[in-house]
Amino acid sequence: MSYNVRSLRDDRDALVRIVRQCAPDVLCVQEAPRFVRRRQAAARLARECGLVVIAGGDTASGLWVLGSLRVTVRQAIDVLLPRTAGLHQRGMAAAVVEVAGARFAVGGTHLSPDAAERRTQADLVLGRLASLGAEHRVLAGDFNESAGRPAWDRLAGELQDGYAVAPWGSEYTSPRRDPGRRLDGVFASAGVEVVECGVPDDVTDADYTAASDHRPVLATLRIPAA
Image 1 (cartoon, rainbow, N blue to C red):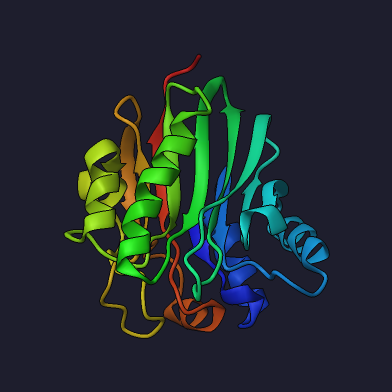
Image 2 (cartoon, rainbow, N blue to C red):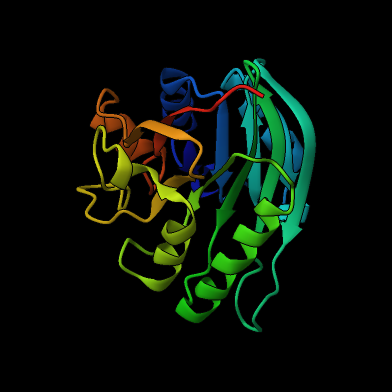
């Protein structure tokens, strides 16, 4: 699951209800609180959602990876990407995990609003995720552009675009009211079966509107056991 939580500035109860209803094994969070009591904020949100913190924080520039108690963590890394002067720092939080015998690398990222920087970052996150050495890879995040644009298409050229492969629920993730753009997604490597992927339809529109300025993407993936 991927979710841009807008620094938890909106209706926290609605956000927690959404995550609990989706019950993900892994949740990649973008725009986590970065300044005041940020570690406590990560731990609290994880606890409220029935999850634990796997990776992320300051050294990933506002990204967290949270996981259920079914997840065994084998390795965790935080990555800061090269920054263009005048633009916000970007990064990736990633881990190698096992769930029910399936081992895979998962990364969460939030790409730049600048098109040129975003395209470069797409190469960097793909390379860094591959460097973890796991056969199966999952990348989730807010990519700040849609299919048909250079960075998105670079990701989709190396990984499967979950919604394009197995559409389920709704497509669009932004803005919060009457969304019309798919800026967020879940990508998976070729050996992973994407069973379904999209914005869940069984969450109330009121909760989506209250919780954040993005809607989450939930993917059901079938990953071969190690």
